[in-house]
Length: 258
Image 1 (cartoon, helix red, strand yellow):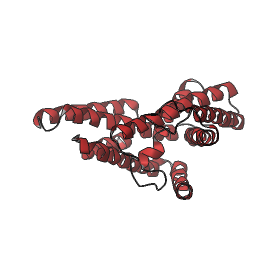
Image 2 (cartoon, rainbow, N blue to C red):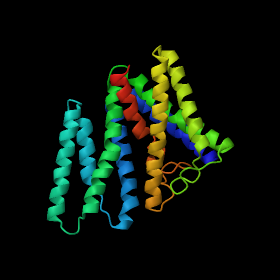
Image 3 (cartoon, helix red, strand yellow):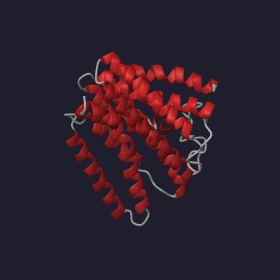
Image 4 (cartoon, rainbow, N blue to C red):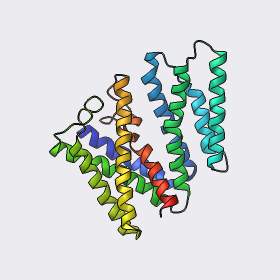
């Protein structure tokens, strides 16, 4: 617990500082996080004979962040080019570059690049700092309240094979905490409390799905943590597993609800 707390006090100010800076420092920071996460997935799957093309993923993420204008259509074309490259590699390197390797490269790219790209897109827009902080507060409030509720009241464990310590009581506590924090945010920025309550509920559910997805990957590949970069937490994926899905919920609400 002490090591985990120290890591939070070191990591959180660095992360928040880049969010406040925005612009190119944030894009470089996010590119670094994506590459660290991709390397963690590479180390996770390679013992099973699956090849991850890290240079190609690096090229893709740099293209995504630095291609102007910052538009979704450019992201789509970049991913199309990445897919064509992988298909050509499948043909030219047959049979060493397997279908499993091709599929996992697509998964890695889609799993970690779009969330950070959309987070940067969100930060770059109108009231961007407020919205990216809302995404962070939503994720952190769910995690903290879920942990506390599970620690003190957890008895029923609905996902024993994926996350044996995850309890139904913790999930309910996390959802309640996320809704409460989002209601407070609605009061602070004077927006619809009903909309923020729904955002808290859906964001909390999404955060839990993100956590379970990453846990299922670790169980499938028989590892405890995705990495060792963040003492007490594990790797980059262990820290961002919920956040990378919550970002999509927040940007959908920002665009279509508020």
